[in-house]
Image (spheres, rainbow, N blue to C red):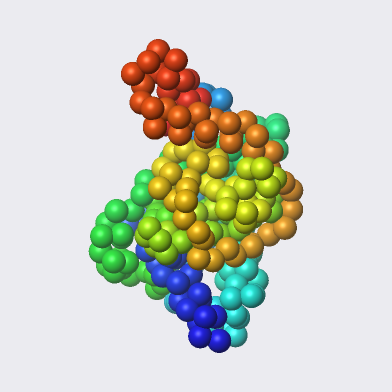
Length: 279
C-alpha cells in the first residue's frame, strides 16, 4: 500500500515538474480567430500548420482544480485508467484537439509517419524553463499544477510530463499502444512510450522511448539510455509502431556522439541525421 501511494505521488510530481494567450471572436464551438503555428518534421521536410485555438475549452481546463488519482480510489495498478479518465478522455479537449489530429491524418498518409510528425511537433514546442526553475509555482491563476494536453498545445510550451502527455494523447488518437514512462534517476523525468517490437523497445518495457523535451528520433534515450524506469503506466492498447529505421538512425546518432565528427564519414552522417530529423 505504501508503494502504491509512493508511485501515485511520484506520478503527480512528474506531471507537476515537467502565460495564457486569449482568443476572441469565438464561434459556437469556441474556436476564434487566433491560431497556434506548429511545425513537424518528416524526412527532412517541415510540415507547418496553424492550429485554430479554442478559447472556451482552454479557459475551462485552465480553471479546473487539482484532481488526484488517489482522490478517486485508483492504485498504481489502475493509474492508466485514472489518467484516461482525468486527462486524456475529456470530450471538450477532444473537440479542441481534433483539428490538429485531422490535419496530420490528411497531410501524412502512412500511419507510422503520422506518429513521427506528431512526436516532432511536440518536441519542437518550447520547454517551460520558468515553470521548472520556479518549482511548479503557478503565478497566473491556473487551478492545477500540471497542464492538460490542450493547455500545453494552446500555450505552446510545457515541462517534460506535460509535453509527454501531448504525445501520448496524439498517438492514442492514431490508434497506437501508448504509455507514460517515469524515471526518478538520474533525475525526475517523464517520457512518452509507443508500443513497438522487442528488438527496439526501451529496457524490455514493450515501448519505444520518445523524448518529449528535445528534437530526437524515436528510440533515442540520451542520458536515460541506461536508466531503469521507476514506473511504466500503459494508457492505451493498439497498433505497434515499426521502429526499425528510427532505431538504426538512433544507433548512428550515438556513433556520431561517441566518436565525434572528426572523420568525413561521421561528419556526413551527422549532417544527414540533423537534416532528416530537423535537430
